[in-house]
Structures are given as structure tokens and as C-alpha cells.
Image (cartoon, rainbow, N blue to C red; front, side, top):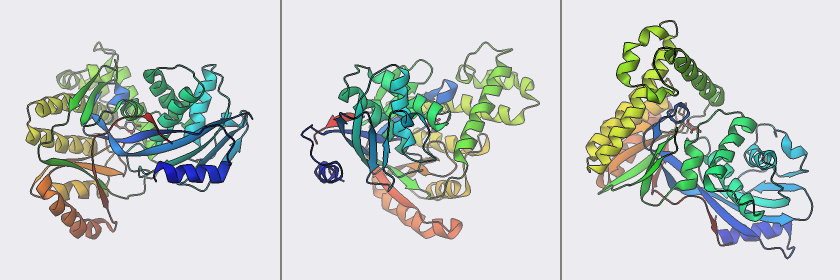
Length: 389
Ligand code: GLA
């Protein structure tokens, strides 16, 4: 929805108080390679995408918070005290979690009324939630003059998901939607937060996302289970290898010390994914720098196999989409992206082969899974910002 239409809806809902309404925007993100490495101190390689969340917001004299969205029916009017409690399983928890972070930090934010509108598909692994949390954090910081820097806002948005929503996510999503740059993907070291913006020179190729439209069930609890399994792996391995994160352990060291995990076969497999995926990100970025998209694509396929076999976060629909991609001439690589358990695949495709990929998906996906997929060709985009209202 364009901002002028959104402004009209804002005025219809909240009236005209004379106070000016400000508009902010945060994108979603796609991770090109490096999944489930972020909370293990590893490398990731995401870019912000040209889908996102717009937020119109205005301060009010009352201490209340009013939240509405053009995407959902639920509207909430809460006093500051009520804003400290989780609101069922609703989208409202993302902005509320952020408000709570500001309060925890002792920052005095006043009341406000706001309207969200987003076009990042929900539950598709494209960080619709980080887009909402980050745009909220950024807007509150600007609106109430808190003077926080971007990294602090990234961490607050992440903590909002960890502490309030209850997902033990890493920092990748909030970082990517904040720091995105058009035509670049970022290689982020999630341990040190050292980040390199790498030009995405795609040279006649496209990044195509295919949404499996598979309903994600229990994805939050399964995600947290993976976090625990990797913690267990690190706890045991760090008794004999000097490491504070799994990503500091090399694939060879893991193989040499596998006996320490003999009684925890799952933890061993999870660790094997993390150390190999961390290494794949390095190699993929190197390939990109050498203009070797073929190798980049091969690493994407390897990443998918590792996520499927060792991390067990793929699903039949996602595997079907990757198989179809593999069988299509002109697709260089494909993998699930984000947490998994449903959501999207990301595909690196020769521009003149995009149509045949989409036709093959149309022809075979429904037959194999009973589901209908849809697709988006994305462009790497800029991160969170104020826009004109
Ligand atoms: C989700 C989390 C991220 C990251 C990915 C998997 O998107 O929010 O922190 O762990 O899954 O790479």
C-alpha cells in the first residue's frame, strides 16, 4: 500500500490532532546462505529485500499505546502497564516486546498511536516479524529522541523476540533489515558483528524466492530445540577443544573429537551442520568475489542437503521445490532459507531460465505435495529508514 493511502487510513482511524504523523519503513530479508549459524557465532550472508513494513506513527498526550495494522483485524489500545504482558499469540507482541525493551532500558517513551502495513509474506522465512520489530524500534527512537545507535536498536529488537515473544533467535534478521544496502548482501560475523557489504554482481542472473505455502507447525518450539541441541554440543566439545562458539570449531576438529558426542547423536549432527555451513558461507562469498556463480550455486545445494540431513529443518514441500530447481536447466542453486520447517526456497537462476523454473514448479509441485507455490523475484534493498508520509 502506498504511503498516501496509508496516511488516509491513519487519519480515518485516529483523526487529525494537529500533531504530525511520521512514516518509517523496514524491509524483510532473505538469507542467501548460512542458516542456523547466527546463534552459534557463525557467518551469515543475507540481504534486505524489496518487501517490507511501513509504520505510520504519532505521539499522543495520553500514556496509552494504540496499535493497528492493515494486515490484521486486531486493534489494541493498551495502557503502559498492560504493554508489559504478552498479548496471546498475536502480531502485536512484536511491537509490544520492543516497547518493553525501551522501558527496561529506562527510556521514557510517551504514548503513541500507530498503523502498520506490510507486504512481507508471513511465516515464509522472510523475516516479517523482524521487519515489524525493527521498524518499531527505529520509529520509537526517532519519535522520542532516545539517541540510540543502530546496533543498540538491532539488539533491542532481537531481545524483544527472545524475551517477550519467546523465540531464542539469533541476530541475523534484525541486523539484515536494519543494515541492508541496495545491490549488496552482507557477510556478517554473528560473534563479533564484523560485517562486510559485498556487491551482488549477478551478471544476468536473478534471485527468485518460491514460497512452499506450507503451514509451519510447532516451528517456534522446534527452533528453540535446535538452539538447545547446539548449546549441548558446544558444552561438551568445549571441554576438549578451546572454543566459545561452535563456529570456532573447524570441521576437522569436530570429526576428530566426535566421541565426546557419542551419546548425543543429534547434537553431533547439529554441530556438523553449523561448522560446515559456517565454512560454506566463507567459500560462497569468495566464489561471488571471483564471479563464480556456478560454485556459489553448488554451495547453496550443499547447504540445503546439510539443513535437511543434519539439521532436520527441511520438509517434503521444501525438498520438492529444491528437486524441481535442480532439474531445471539454468538454475545454479537452491536451498531453503531462514529457519525452515516450511517457508521459502531461495534460487539463483539465469534470467532467461526464470520462466522455465516457474513453469516446472507449476507443473510438478502441486502434483507432488498437494500445495500451490508462489514466487517473488527480489532485489537487494536498503535497510530501515524514515520515509515521507
Ligand atoms: C530465523 C531466526 C534467525 C536465524 C534463522 C536461521 O530466521 O530469526 O536468527 O537463526 O532463523 O538461520
